[in-house]
Every structure is written in structure tokens, then in C-alpha cells.
Length: 383
Ligand code: PMP
Image (cartoon, rainbow, N blue to C red; front, side):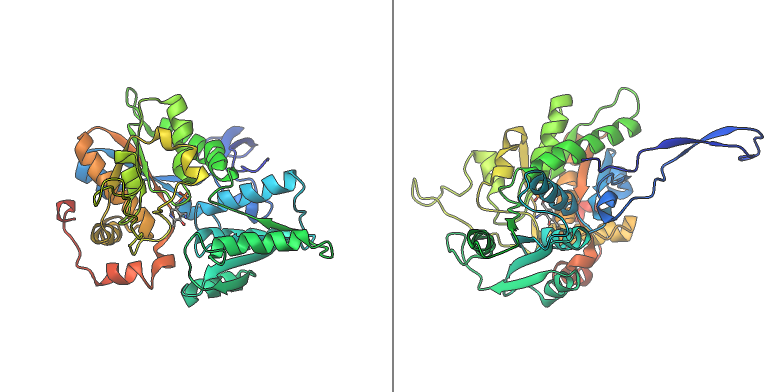
């Protein structure tokens, strides 16, 4: 769609500008966005000074936190909705419904966009989801359904429940309104929007800041659905095949093993016996023990993996506040630990981009409780 509205326009100014008389041309980035969806994307990229200075590399963070719903998931929610509208599966301002099973950022982005576009968001969450998150979703106008926590094979598991609820509505001819199952893990509109927008934005922003003769050396991020890493990596590698793509992974997640050894689970115990781990971490939004369609779409582009301990990401979060005033969420902190480690491995003079996914304010009761209580570190070798 025609969604990216911050294009720079040139206007003629017919009065003195900074002392110059006569007609001056001036660039302005301001075109008033028509509604919240036009604020999505075109996020800035910031040089993370503390990490750059500590490693002698140039390290940049793509500020996905600056989307109106506070995370990269705004892009995904918008793409899923527009894709469904184009296929005439749902119609704006009709009372149609959008279902998703999520306790995270995607629910927030969907709830926000559903209000703007006249849909009803139904968000299904496990009933141990924090009240803070449920309140946020309800305040954004979503109907929140709580279900018992269950494994992915259980039909009552929250993602399965959301899918079944949407199907039930569509299969009942008496229902006037239609329901869409957003399906962020399997819906390929997810990685495609990162290929169409996040990747090109990073490519053009990094091209602007790189000195002559320098190139982007690595792109590092974690994966939840896998949409970000797949879409961005595919775009970057098609243009800069030498770029190394590195996945940062929290404890218990299978992506690390998948990239390092080709299998998600440990094959340690008996030969042929796969040991499946619980994703066991205070980090939210990344780490998984199954291969999704959005991960598969770009997994061939991933060159390496770095496992990040909770203790390290907690210390990094605090370090970024202490040194840069950057108040990031848990997955961003994981990305920054992996980026720091990879920069040390590459040595000075390299350029790396990572993703700052969301803000610390979404993680006050869990991740930041630990970060707040942890002692500040003076330098990153203490990670
Ligand atoms: N960070 C946060 C806070 C998230 O909510 C998510 C998405 N679940 C991610 C990172 C990972 O992004 P993706 O789903 O594109 O892999």
C-alpha cells in the first residue's frame, strides 16, 4: 500500500532563511500523517555510542520502539490486516473481527489498529498473563479471552483457541460479521513486510551513514515468529551478500541449536532421543522450540547464533540506561549483548546493525525488576 509517508519534500521559502535573502529551497520531512497507520515504519536508526566506543565498531540500533504501538509488530499487524482486506476477507468499519493468540506486542498493535480501522480485536492469552498486559489490551479496546496455559498440541492452547474461535464464527451462516485469524507465526505477510520495509529502511539508512569504502558487516537480532530476521536478512543479503546474519537467542530456545547443529533439540541423552527444552528465560518476545513458516522463509540466510544468558541481558539493559539513556526491553537487551560479543569477535572497524524492538516500560514488572536490582557494571567485560 501507499503507507510510508515521511518522504522528504522540497519547498520553496520566499523569505530570508538563516540570513540568506531571496528564494531558498529547504528540505522538510513533514507531511501530516492521516491517521495512526501512517505513523508506522520509517523508524530512525541510532548510533549506540557506548557499544561503539567499547568495541571500536560502528553499532546502530533500528528504533522499532518508535512505532506508534511501541514495537515492530505495528508493521506486521498492518500488513496482516491490509493483506486480508485485499483478499476481501475482512472489511474496515464493518464490525468484522480479528483474532490472535498472543500475550505480547502483536496483540497491542492489532488492538490499536483495529480501533483505527473499525474492527473488533479478540486477543486470546494464557490466564497467567500479567494483569498489566491484560489492562493495556482492554484499554486499547480489545476483547481479552483468558484460557488455561497448555502445550501447542492442545486444541485449547491460546493460539489454537484463537484460530478455532475465528473458524467457528466464519462457519456459522447466521453470523453477519466475519472473523480473521491473524496467525503471526505462519502468516507470511509478516516476513514480507520486513522485506518490503524494515530491510530497505536499514539498507538506505546505513548507506547514508557509512564512510566511503566501508560496508555493513553484520545484522544481528533475535526471533520470535522469525518475521524480522527472515525479511530483513533476505533483503540485505540480496544486495550485500557478504553481510553476516547472526541470531541472538535466549536460554532454552531451539533456534541456537538449529543454526549451530541443524536440529532444534539436544541429541545428547540417547542417540536419536531429542531433548526438548522449555524456553526458560525472563526475556519476552524471542525464543521458540518450533520452526515457523516465518522463520523458514529466511533461515538459510542465518550464518551464526549467539546464546545470551538472562544475567547478561539484565546487565546490558542497565548498562544502556547508565551510558546511553536508552531504556530498552528484554529482547533488545539480548540483541545488544550478542552485538557486543560479535563486535569483539570481528574486531575494531566493523559496522553492525541490530534491532531495538520495544521499550523497557513494557517490562517493568519482570525483566526491569531484575535489572533495577542488579549492580551497574563499569565496563562490558563484566557482562
Ligand atoms: N521483541 C519483541 C518484544 C517481540 O514482541 C518480538 C515478537 N514476538 C520480537 C522481538 C521478535 O520478532 P519476530 O517475531 O519478528 O521474530
